[in-house]
Structures are given as C-alpha cells and as structure tokens.
Image 1 (cartoon, rainbow, N blue to C red):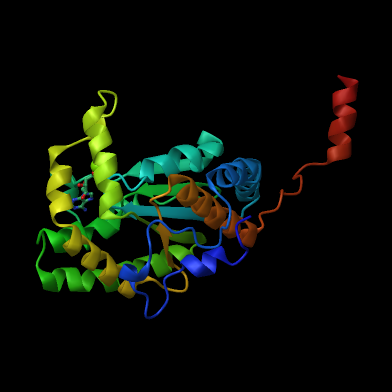
Image 2: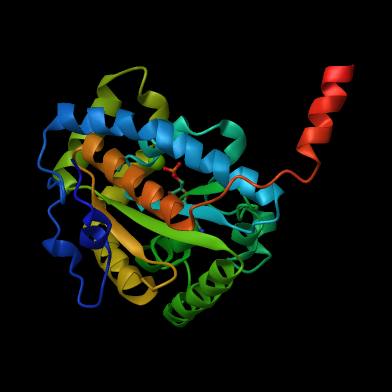
Length: 279
Ligand code: AMP
Ligand code: MG
C-alpha cells in the first residue's frame, strides 16, 4: 500500500534538493512492481467516479476543477501518465494539452497567453503535457530569453497560478524525475524498435547533452514556484509503475479533498416519476 503521507513525502518544500532524490526510489511504497500495478488498477474506479462527481457538481454550479501539470526530461513518462493514470477517466472529463515549441502566432503574445486558453473548465481534469514551465526551463538552458526576463517569469507564474487557484482550480505540478542512465536505456529502445522511431527526435540527444543544465533549471524553478496553492511534487520515475501509482495518488488526494457532491435535483422528482408512469 502507498502510505497516506506520500504526497507530503514528494512535495517540494523549502530547502528541497533535487540531487538528493533517487530516481529509482519508491517513496511511501514498500511493495514491488506487481503490488504497485495491482494498486494502480484498484484506484482507477475511484478516480473515474470522483471525476464524474466533479463534473456533476459543476452542473450544479460548483467551480472546482483540477489541473495536472506534467514536466520531465524526454522519455520521463509523461505520455504513460496520460494513458495509464488519466486514461481511467471518461475522456469527456479530461482536457489534455501537449505544449510544443510556440508557433509564430503564439510568440506574438505573452508566454502565459496560450496556457490561459487551455485552463480546465469547471468539472474537468486538465492535463498539461509540458507547460508554461518550458519558458523558464528550456529557455534558461538554451538561452532563448534574456536572464532578466526569465527571472521575472517565476513571479509572473506564481501570480498567475494564485489567480487560477482562487478561481477554483486545484493545481498539482509534477516533475517526473528520471536518471540519465534510465534515459539512455529508454532512448536506446526508441532507436532499436521500428515501432518507437516515431517518438525519437535527434533533438532529444542535444537536450540530453545539456542534462546538468536542465537539472539546475529544474532546481531553480522548483525553488521559486512551489507554493501552498500550487505545489510541486517530484516523483521518482525510473520505475514507471511507481510514477503512475504516485501520480494517481496525488490526483485521488486532490479530488478527495474537493469531495465533490452529486447535485440535488433541480426538478420535482416525485412529480417526474408520476409523469413518467403516466406516459
Ligand atoms: P515533446 O514534449 O517531447 O513532444 O517536445 C516538445 C518540445 O517543445 C520540447 O523540446 C520542448 O522543450 C518544446 N517546448 C515546449 N514549450 C516550449 C516553449 N514555451 N518554448 C520553447 N520550447 C518549448
Ligand atoms: Mg520528446
């Protein structure tokens, strides 16, 4: 079983040190892969029901939604989280956005413009596969923006996320933390299997060559943007089964915290039953 305080173990707090997190570890979980997969399966029905309740509550006027932000190096397993964790939920209840390098049109606006447009409506679980954090991660590493501009973005992000949270969205930010060795294994697999070539881009190796700089950029982003209302969780991701279980747990805890309620009927139930019987 995953410990009840796993979210707290994974949460980025003051003094957090990314280097000290072992990507092969399984915080809060003592079982093996088989146990982990069994627990993931056991959680899918509850996750699906909680989202359905979230949506139902929104039809009754509740403003709550959830936003899961996924970040991580290439091959960290973001797609697997979408398929194996979020995939348990009714597709109508999920708003998924994969953020690629901005288009020329998007570049004419502030970096948060395209993000704001994809925020989940009430009742939905929004998922960002990459996010506005690229504007302080890859931008810092590849010097795509001046350092002063990047420096201001952390505060802009915090202000933005506080507003989003105040409007009813619970923000869960996850860094899937893999080791350089595990990435090598996963990239090698992409290069060995014709059914994986499509996932590989030569560009991935250029990012890999900048690994230490990316880790530093992550450390800074985690330090500056893990807040009470929009916390970061660093999830060890060398074991895919653990990462999936941990993210499912974070979503379950978030939804349980909202505790969405089935809305009361806005019609006279008895009268409708009589009408139906009389037809
Ligand atoms: P992938 O998620 O592997 O399909 O790759 C998406 C690519 O888009 C990655 O190389 C990201 O670094 C890049 N990307 C996403 N958002 C931004 C951004 N705001 N600025 C620059 N590059 C970005
Ligand atoms: Mg990629």
